[in-house]
Length: 386
Image (cartoon, rainbow, N blue to C red; front, side, top):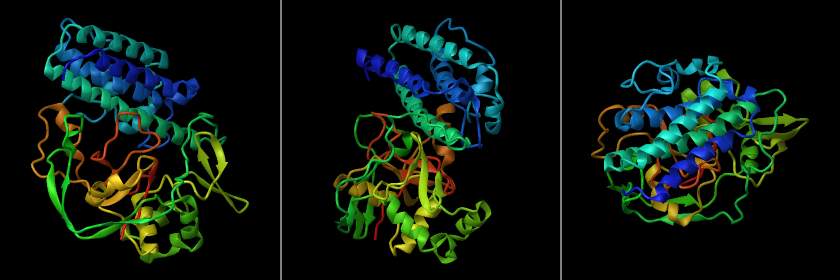
């Protein structure tokens, strides 16, 4: 990779876009952490900045002075190699540093990065820069979904934006795409950016199958609810059935039954649910149960990747039946960046596709997202297979 003005613009634009996401927030919104999985917006702003400082400016910025020696402890996420950090569940207790200080930190680091890149264009540094840019893009999506959870659990259900479109119907009819039995190439295979968990391109044998060209809609899932799907134990895994009962789950996240009509919280505020809109905010547990009820199944991530060129995707992260595991010949990077993906390859399910919250230039057919099967605060949906 060669440092070009386009790459510098990519860096600058990414930094600006993160702050644009936060522009509708009130100062009080920046520090809220309702659950452990949701980080305060202020923490995202600091963490994405710390990433550049820790992995690029400290080792490569000759004479670089840390903005604040305590910020590594505050904004490190899960990197054991780097040192101690604030416990994840305590991020919402960080009333200090202030929001103003964190924005000053961002400005300081961004300027230092631009200055460094004008002097040093080594391949190693540019590779780290690209990872850092896409790391921040990941957090842009998390920012949006965390903000939605923060505001969606505020009793007033305040709107975040009048323009952000979450629920755009798919305007094509439903069809089943038939895929032939055979060997299919899986994994990233181009010079464009990807994460290490996409590498190790390999052949996978797939029996013949069919996959829907359309996501499951709100209306279709309403039928599942009306048929008593959340009360039929035989549709659910044992762990999922425990989850349904312990958490008293009766509908997707953000759904509210108001005087017999379904509404949901969106970033535009509380809205009546439109049946033809694609379903969102369901767990793997719910996706599996719905597929069972329809006498279908979820596709594996390999079936999804082999067929993805035949249907539109990108509105929802789509649960697959695949466990998050390494591809053949997968190798973790040495040092702290080796903690980025590999150590999470246990007890999680793969999702494919991207969502309405995924930033531009940050998704591709081989992208492997992953979450625990009970989580649903992301824009998660499903596509049926059989």
